[in-house]
Image (cartoon, rainbow, N blue to C red; front, side, top):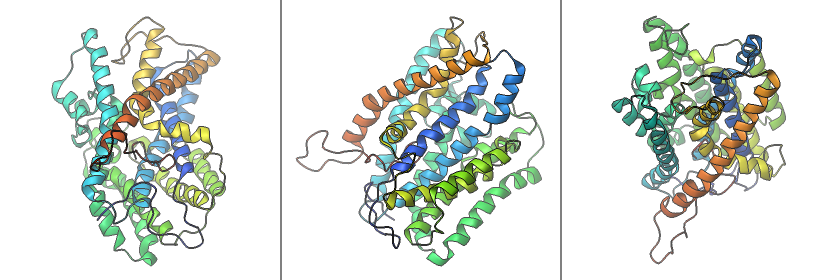
Length: 409
């Protein structure tokens, strides 16, 4: 199995031309990142009125679940879209390493520098697991929630997905095009069985610290365990192969968007966080190919504008920093260091609380742009691909704008 440079595509779906850049998918990353930000904003308890908080939870709790599911499917889709015989697995792993780890390590060091003065003890093993992005493999709440940068548990799934991709791609390429839909439906059905398996075979205690209505073993297996969440990545691989082999059903971007929004609205009361991750998987598996084929046809969409692509390119940096920034900004209202997430919480009326969230989002964008420009881009240019003999520093470029996939692709 081998992989190409971003932008090269060895197969062309019939009637869709030769374009390979996918700016709409990059723009959609910005919306997915915003969805995750909205859900994590719930943890701040910003609003004085308890009814406002309850409504925020009702309408916003699943937003991040859809956003995260989008990222997992998207990653599988894009790395498959750009795969061919011109690149080795080793080169692919090198690019993924230098895309994934530098931002993470820099922000980890900043968090550590902010954390130490608080005097709050750091659990060494858990922190090291967080540094090496392996926390989700441990069925332990202590490991998961003491990794210094909470949201990076999901990057554990990215690490597994990238490590396994050469083999997965080799196997999926052997599937006859006429059977790709059956495989995609089958893997989605397997994802739907995850909570069923958890409820049947895992204990109903102790309760999860962040979702006490479900036991921790079931919660971990259904939502955090890399092997179960990697099913979404596999669906992304299969959907890309469906498009590349001309088996796409022709669903357009607008109907696919309405399906995704409609699914979100009718499943507001579904506890996706407990492990029902197949709920967003289904609409995301249709949304991504719909926008990809729109890009290949050269169509304008609401998300392939220059602004949306600019935002989408910075979403990995945004993701790495956003929870820390949320806590730090909120804690600043009480004059405290919020890096640990423990501080005296100031609450606001509805209008002021919304303004605080918007302002914090903008702060995240500014800091993410700095991280992207100072860390992510220079390292990708210098280290992502081995230089040819005689090639000057900086002569190797990173992924082309518009070809980016999940948070790190």
